[in-house]
Image (cartoon, rainbow, N blue to C red; front, side, top):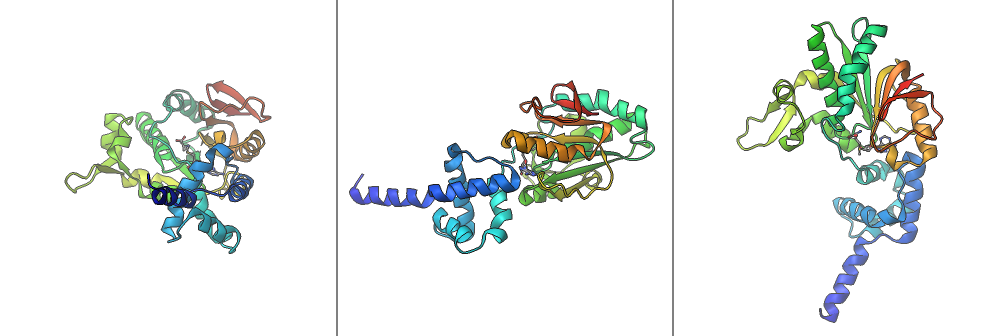
Amino acid sequence: MTAQGALRLAAAEEDRAIRLEHFRRLAELVEARIGIRLPMAKRGMVACRLQRRARELGMESVGAYCAALFEADRLEEEFPHLVNALTTNKTDFFREPVHFEFLEREALPRLLASRGAGRYRPLAAWSAACSTGPEPYTIAMVLEEFGRIKGGGFRYEVYASDIDTDALAEGLRAIYDEQLLLPVPTDMLRRYFMRSRTPNDRRVRVVPELRAAVNFWRMNLLEPDYPWSRPMDIIFCRNVLIYFDRATQQKALEGLLEYLEPGGYLFVGHSETLNGLTLPVRQVAPATYVRL
Ligand SMILES: C[S@@+](CC[C@H](N)C(=O)[O-])C[C@H]1O[C@@H](n2cnc3c(N)ncnc32)[C@H](O)[C@@H]1O
């Protein structure tokens, strides 16, 4: 490489890098406000994601973006976009399928029999940290199917919240690449998804009836300003606690559990554990708890 080429490369790398001082301030801020830990090992990933955001804003580098945040007072206005850029939204339909088998076989029959949930009042299920929607739509499909088997009259509501407004907008749109639907059983595919009329368009959309059953909201798990007045029968809080430290996990779960009926079910991700936390729950299956 020529000396000039090496200089150009070094300059480009500097544009993409995030200064240590800026990274530390960002990490502190993000952890304090939304709980997500950003250890030093994530510095490259953060720089890469913020580079994309900087480009969207027409800025020439991550350095310019951070300067705008910290020196030009644009932090508050930019914070929601910063969060959208830094969250990890990986999700799937029927992710960790044993939870949905448990729901169908154990939780729903018990909730119906013990307190008439679904019969005398709508059964309420909440996907907290719902990302782009596959989790709440999976819950809604399982509830619909349960209602079909029970022979009508079974009512339910699904709530879905996340901090990432881009992810929520995708959830509301409910349009997915058909590749994402591989885990969905064929009969449910037929009942709950519509194909595009455009030839060669590989996307599908959730049918209007199921879309209408899912209510999306922006909510930070660390700010207990839940907009619902009624308690839930079921809460899914999966694959988000891994981004928090123990104290933040405790705080987030304490807040959620205030909204879970005694006898209601809490599902967390299979790589997450509540061991060592002090919470009013009893474990009944892997990554599955009942509120005491
Ligand atoms: C990996 S996704 C998990 C999605 C889904 N629960 C699943 O298991 O497939 C994690 C989600 O948590 C959300 N999240 C992260 N911190 C949050 C917070 N403080 N409050 C609410 N949502 C948060 C992210 O925006 C992201 O969509």
